[in-house]
Length: 403
Image (cartoon, rainbow, N blue to C red; front, side):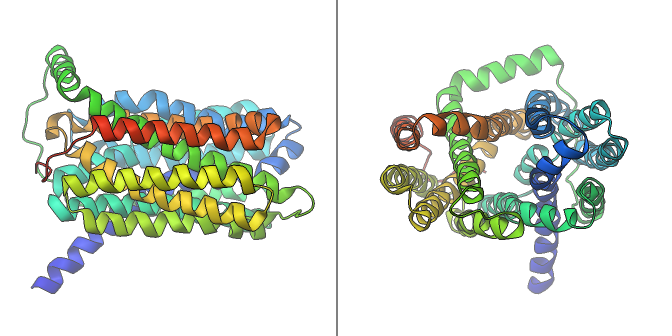
């Protein structure tokens, strides 16, 4: 009986893990084909980069609105249609690429971004609805690990698929999306949604009350999570550019394999952290602080050693481990901070900042690295140190997080 229960739990956990996985694949898998896309569609590099940017911006803008809807209906009533639209828009994007229509491609990517807003952020809220204590933190750790795993395999998968035909990744993605849709539809049993929807004026009044009471630590947690991803993916883009240039000149699958090293550090640490924290408030605060210390130290070390590829990979990997300590703790604290009726909005606002952090990292890092790589890493270390002091002062969870 216990074995069947455990098997059922992991089946559900696996279904949850597919949602952030397809969220990442729908964006990151296209990065390796951007140079070829620009060439085939006769557009500039800036225009090709907008294929990624418009997705992230639309997702970031629409996440709060979809979070509000998810608080009024069943979570799956948002996630399932969102996955369907996400996959269908991927097909439209593929045809836009074949037709050479940049307008069609951009419209399809904007639709994908809007649909993406109803996937992983709402899945995080649903985990908070369904699980308590150790099971919740374990599931959220797995979601974060799945997110990182998607970023590990995305560039490799995109490179491999493009060896066939450059636009194939657009059409491959809807297949993954369909798998996630089936998993969510049939493997996740959502608890009954018995509460009547709160009138919007009362709902907004309650949200205002939540942020009046908990806003200082919630906003600190939001910014810390967004900063962790801003640093991580900005540094990865810097490493990617470094690998492509002489004397290394590493591209394609080989480059994807090297970028996978720090991301594997994130995946393993995220999952392990989710298993051990079990809503232990004091432990979560200590792990967040430890993660920020590791990130700060690794960035300072990289500022002196960034000309050595091996040293840079080692310190970026250390920083990824620090991020893996932080994110599952923040996820658990944020999802457990409010009642079910407002959880969709609270987690959506958090994910909105995460999206914007990921979107802002690459262009800002490229701009700063052109001026001074040493200065870039020192400024990042200062930001991480600032987050350390903010967390130390403002985030004081109880010894046991509320169920």
